[in-house]
Each structure stands twice: as C-alpha cells, then as structure tokens.
Image (cartoon, rainbow over all chains, first blue to last red; front, side):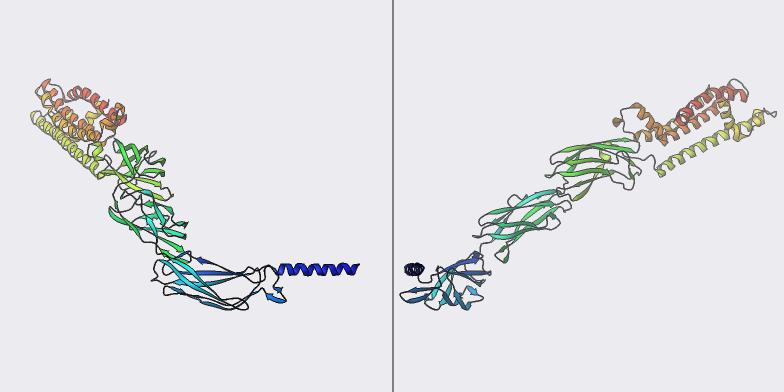
Length: 431
Length: 106
C-alpha cells in the first residue's frame, strides 16, 4: 500500500513538472537605464546606469522535450560608445558572467559631455554581447544636453537707497528642464554689507523659482552710484556651475533713516535741554534705540537726561526724547547726538547727528563759565574800580591840601589818612 | 545844589558800563523758552557779569557819595564828619540793600 502511494506521487510530480515546462523555458533579459543628471550642460560629467534583469522565473535548468535548457543569462561584455559630443570615460565591461533567473545587474558608465556639445538629444550606443543561447543586444540611450542656466532676477530692487538698513529679496529662477541642487546666492557691492553674506536656497525644481532675502546695510556707504551684483552657484548633478551675474546700479543718498524733527532747545545759562521727536524714516524696524549726548570737548552730558532710551522704533513711527547738556566752550555751535540701535539682524549700528544751537536759539552763544571771557570782564571792572578809587583818593588829597592852605588849624577829619577815607565811610554805613 | 548835580556825573558813566554788562547777561538768556519769572531772575543773578555790574554800581555810588559829601559840606557849611554822616546814611542803606540782594542772599 505504501509502495503504491509512493509511485502515484512520483507520477503526479512528473506530470506536473512536464506541464509547467511547456509554458516558459527561455531567459528573458530586460534593460533599464537611468541618467544622472537628467539633463546635461555642456562640460558636465555624469553617469549612465544600465540595469540588466533576467526576467525568467522558476528553476535554473528546465527540461523540454528531453532537452535541458539553461535559464541563466550569460553576458560576455557590455560597452557604451559615445560620439563627437559625448565622451564615454569608461567604455566597457567585459566577462560579466551569469545572470540567474530573477536577478538583476547594474552597470554604470561615466559620461562627459564635451564643452562644444550642442543643445539637443544625443545618443550613446549600448552593446551587450551575450553567450549561451542569447543574442547580442544593441540599444541607444538618449542623452539630453541643454545649456540653459539658472538666473538671478533683481525684480524689486530699489534704484535709490539711503544710509539705512533694508531688507531686499532677489528671485532665483531655474530655467532648466531638470532640478538643480545646492543653490547659493552671493551678493556683492562696494561699501555695503550684506547679511547673510551668502544665502542658501537649496534645490530648485525645474521651471521654478526661489527667493533669497538679504539684509542690506548701507549705513556707512558713501554718496553716489554703486553697482550691486548677485551671482548664484548651483549643482547640476555633481557639476558646479555659476549663473550669470545680475547687476544693478544703485544710487546712495546721504540720508539717515532716523531723523530728528520738532527739536526744541531750551537754554538756561550754559545748560541746554533738547527735546523733540526721533522718526524712523527707513523701511525696517530699529531695535534698542538709544539717543545720547556725545561727550566731546566743550560739551558735557548732564544727568538725568545724558541719554534717553527709546526702545524699538518701528518703520514709519516716531518717539519723543529729551536730552540735556552743559556747553563749556564758546566755540560750540552744535551738539552731537549719538543714535545707537540694532538692525533687524541684531547688528549694532551707531550714527551721529548734529543739532545746531545757532539756528534754534537765535542768539550767539557766549559762555558764562568761560575763563577767558570772564577774566576779561573782571579785568575791565577792576580797572574801572581802581580808576574811581584813584579819583576819589585824589579829590580827598586835593581837598586836604586846599584846606591846609586856607586854614592852618586843620580839622580832626582832615588828619585822617587819604587811603582810609573810603573805608571809614563804609564803616559808618554799616553802623 | 550844584555839587549835588555834579554827584550824578559818575552815574552817567556807571549807567553806560552797567548797560554793557547787563546786555551781556540778557543776551545769554532765551526768554522765550523760560516761562517762570523766578527762573529768569535766578539766571540773571547767577551770571557773573551781573555781579561785576553790581560791584561797579557800588563803586560809582561811592564816587557820587564822595562828591556829595563835599557838596553838602560847603553848601550847608557842615564839618566834614557831619557831611559824611549826612550823605553816608542814605547811601549806606542803598549799598547795604544792593550787597544783600546781589551777594549775600544769592
């Protein structure tokens, strides 16, 4: 019984084996490829990865009509041939070997697109030489070459700037038919500082744009025209490229973004109290704004308003302030005020503005504490005092002499010495 | 009377010199910006030019007094002591007031 069952199973297995052998018996080789980068630029180096797959399934050896078929794909060599515009750096693989059923193999070729390559589709020829029952395989792989570049567009860039801190953005446009990666935008201009000095945009998909925003500091720029340029660097595959430089002529005008208005100057002797408004005339907020009297020669800041903290002064806003100073020199015609603040990137900035004393007070200043001036006044007064004392003394002396001549018997009053007459008079007054 | 009139001659010079110093004082003060009269007064008296003007005023007054002493002496035939007393009392009171206001009470 057991023997009978075993024979039946062997027969069943034999029938089922022969039944499946009639459906699929030969190896089927398929080919796929990928190109990096998707679209080359002239001069680029890239890779072509060819994937060979043996699509056969099941056993390696198949019996068909008493014939045993080998389902392995034997690949003798694979070679890629370029043309006058495409150079294949490593042209061929030889003696690759067997590719079993369901297995795949990736062959990578390095390709260089020559500098003189024209825009368009170029073909490279792939030749796979097979062994065993396989035929040779010839295939043309299309390589796209396009010389379109990434472009920086200064779309909303102002043509005139003050001495200010402004936020400016530029568009980076990917005109290429494939994505570019690691895009970095770099600005440059003489006498200006940018923050950040390089802006990392990242990847830009094909036909898209990204925006790079910069903080533009023209605080210390000289008046006149300056050329501002932007360039971008990017990678097409593994190839570094630079975009064309976008430039624009910008006129810098000597105008601070923080301006004083409504200044009132009150003077009491040599003490000056300045009050008014500080206006943010710029387009960005100024943080931590503080105004102070600059301690220069002839000007002393006076407490409690030697400096005045305003805080954040938003664009198009103003704040009032009050400062006081003592002017100790006659030559002072204006008081320098330091305005300290931080720009949107927290960079410290200080500017100095002068507030004129002449135009506002309407009188020329003459110092009360000035030693030279004061000394002159006292000297003049002393000369007059001495002159008068001499005149008084002389008159008394003359009188005394006259009386002595007129009356030999002098009065007691006349015996008094000349120089004490005035003092005596003062004594009597106090009494 | 004639000597009394002569006594006012120094006052002419005094007025001219005082005018100069007072001008210096007032030119330093911006009256438009100071509303408080007391503050104006303080500023005027705080100025050294004002002190100089006061001192000169005192000296010129003494000069006038000197002339008046002899004027009174001859006009009323008084002794010099009596003439000094006669002129000294009003002048002394005037000077005392000036000294107190300008120097002591400041």
